[in-house]
Length: 137
Image (tube, rainbow, N blue to C red; front, side, top):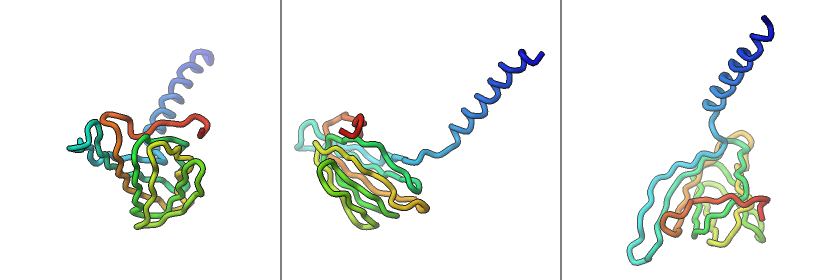
């Protein structure tokens, strides 16, 4: 009888874990706000989004292949691109990434408070907003 219960118990445990995984908020939340073609700049579009970082959250190395402007709305964030010094920014401060930069550091500077920033980027029409960089290189 016990051998018949093992698959049932495993199925229940998997269901519970899946249910929990769906209810746990992501440490990094991106909310698209707008994407618009840019008249007079063939093949380019502007994209605006907000990024929310849970306390202590870190995003993996990535690149945008876009001119990217970051404006901190709340909290404090540590930003850095390959080859440049990391900076810690607070509300009202900005950060810029060139299209060929590798964004090596993007983290919430606080282990207890969330952070939120607005991102404005000019990129190739239809291109992804962000692409992972394996190993940060």
